Length: 315
Image (cartoon, rainbow, N blue to C red; front, side, top):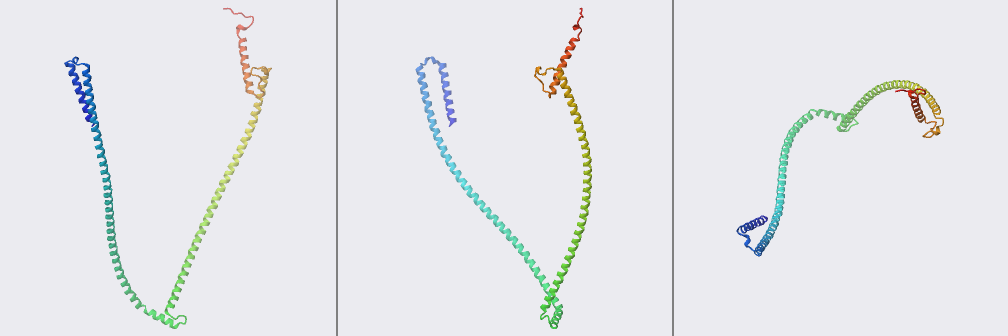
């Protein structure tokens, strides 16, 4: 729609431009101003009608586009719902297919397991049959022991049945095994105790050696500490003596400075900065230094040849 309006105004502007050029070339001076104004009004009215028609067409086009957009949205919603249903159906079918595959795999594995178990059971049955034959042969070969036990029961007053004899025998065997196991445990415990005692003795010996070594190290450290203490005590005494000497020297210097200050300044209260305290040695030295500088200056002035009395200089 915008392209149509642009093309319309462009073509209309070009036509007006060509008409203006034609009129100017053929003699625009023959047209009166009222006629030209009327033509301009008609052209403006035509332009307004064209714009109105274009607006109406643009509104209809917008309405059609909105209707089409609503239909497309409805179709999009329907397609989304259909896609969701299809996706859910696909997922359900895939899940059912996977479950069927797992079930088939499990049944196949169960069949293989049952076949292997059946083969094992058949082999066990054959082995049990062979073992039964061996036991029967063994019972036949040991039947004489049963007759012997029966004769023992008949000859004994303590037992009334063969079962009692066998129970007594089993009890004695278990008792013997318990005694042997107890004796073995006692022997193992004794061996462990002996090994632990040996370790304790070795550990105690090592501990005694370590403590002796540590004691020797501590004794060495104590001797070194005592030597170091004597050294530092002698140094402290030296420092105290040196400090006393320096204190005495400092006192002497302060007294000498005070004497010089009192000699230089007969009246300290008349100084420019006021009286200086007796303990302020630094300011006293500064005042003495200034006095000496002034004295040296005066001496230099006095020592000049021109300043000597009775001597005249000739140029």
